[in-house]
Length: 228
Image (cartoon, rainbow, N blue to C red; front, top):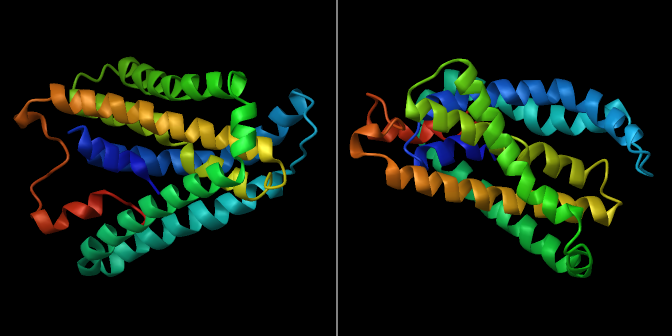
């Protein structure tokens, strides 16, 4: 689920910028993660092993293919996109909640055992690193528009959710510690970013709403999910 445009809308930021950046980062992730993750695992001398293909095929199947199909759907059947997008968002959020609850039940003892370890420290550091990368990007480009700045920061902060879930489910499904660590990182990360989003929304004036354009209201849900 591409949460970044949804959070950008909630923050009254520029949804179009968030959607565009999300697509760019998705493609970059599909290229970089299969190369970088096996090297990172070897560098820390972990017992985990994963080849480039082990990492790549879930990304190609569950990120790239839906992205291509979704873009084609919007081009070929634009009238069907708004109602479908609303259901895609609801189903995706529901699936994420199911994933979180099932993981908590299945690995509750491991969650308790990792309390106070580096997993929770990394969970708090992760979203701030993402927000910081977005801040450095817009600052380096000298972007002054608050809506664009917040959209960029939100997108860079939550982009890692889907790839990490795929890594948890497929190449590292046999290691409970990976599942627990990724669940902690994703859950804490979403909560922290959501707090920033609500803070930005409260600080934004009514005229600062970048989530809408000159399109009719019925077209607005198409901004939520580029793959719908």
